[in-house]
Length: 142
Image (spheres, one colour):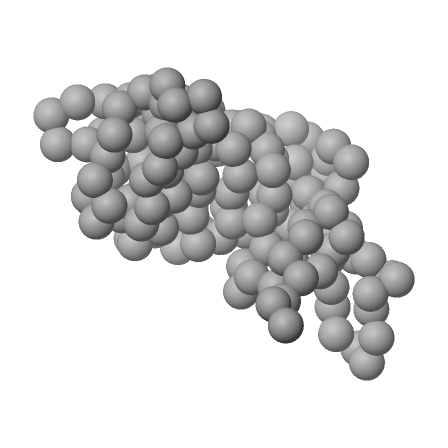
């Protein structure tokens, strides 16, 4: 029996939970830059759509803009700069663009903390699936 990977019911079994948020994203690949936005993000990488095919195992430089809230509820914007590797590239259903998955390969500690903070603020504990003290999350409506 295959594991249930339906994020809508909170039962996704990934090591790092992902959230479906559109965030500004800039990729630098060899001699060209691509501006796009995330389709989803986790602490281990991003999934996005681009106009150009990028070969899996291609190294990329990433700039990501994260809207964060501080403890005093002040809104700030943080720029995350890191390195990644394309791990999957496939044509989208319309066949005019490419969906790519990028694994974060080198993230400065402060940027990793900001990514984790952003993800945690968009995940909510799911009491329905919480048994035995295991902390489970479901996607928020935002």
